[in-house]
Length: 547
Image 1 (cartoon, rainbow, N blue to C red):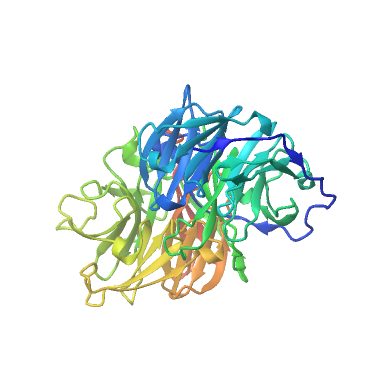
Image 2 (cartoon, one colour):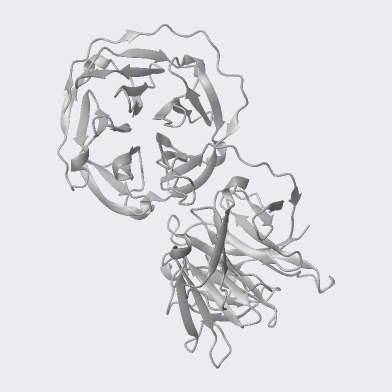
């Protein structure tokens, strides 16, 4: 461990420059992890360990600070704990010395990387009173020099603590007063541009500053809906289809009240601009929560033309007290429930569904098992009953680890799978008519470049020969060619902040006076999540007229 020989800090003269007058750029939320699902409802610290490809999430409770390990596949790799750390926002990994560090009051905590796989690592403490920190709210390291970088929010300065031969030397301070008023939170060094990133939560801005504290870039983070920003860190993109060097900014949002915290992934890369955006018109709302057998969290939707029926799947209903044995619902366009079924025999997480009118089978996606199920109704002709014949195949060999939705394209017989975490659409060609036999052809294209934050639902428009992707963050339907070229976006005319749009299909309009060829977009909305609101029952279907 390092020996700390910390002297009184020397102060760099405050710069007289003003904040950059360059345009404010967009920081786009491309993913989030509800850490409450792993027992960490209030994340307050973040660090990334490159050698282990490990994201560490800190949360402090009575007497202890717990750490969650998140792997490169966004899965939990267990937890460990340390004696309570007061300033978890200063959590940072020092790759120069291979240590996890943090500030605890007037002490510096250090844990060797070799200990991070144990349940109760050994830590060492060193006095840092001579740093004279007023309110430490962030930390990072220069991986080449080993310089320790600390955000002193109280003094509105970055404290640079150089190290030589394992000994910390005389620190210097860089003024951040040019960033304007408001609290400053978090400090992260971007390995791609070498700049230091600091957030101003009240102003909903993110500043990238150089070594002198001059603002080089400014980002708007309002779209990320951050409630309680506590820490920042750069780490590789969670999108497995991105190049390895692509970096994202991860934010620890501790939430508040009934809203649990989460880890938010932001992309700072420039996005393609939409050239054509049209306004949709809301024609009808069906409250699936009010059906005789309610569907509180409808996740998938498809249209069965022969029966003139919408088929809806619910991926969460079995977790709730109102569950009545059904997670599949047959609903008329008028809103009448005409039948129910279940996928429980093979999937408790039916996130998407598509109907093949020619084969009479259903395709059901499951983003827990990373599989597509092919369901052939039995002698009763009804899907979701005991006599169904079910086969399946994994989406992992194609590269999809989060298959949120699926659609069978009429005519071609191809399956299009929407991967949520990857913001990628996979085009699977069965070649010989059999999916998953090792003979399939596969192509894929990125939809994140169009500003899509979560590829939550997918459908097809047979009349236009296009693919539809729905993004619950943007509240838009993105219409693309089957090769992934963006044609237009349709704004969904709903302003509720708690929408969770999850699936889309094309079906005739609900107006009996319209032409039989007139079609609408039919969209399911999960609305509030039952993890945060266990007794919620607020599912809906929206009919949006196609412009």
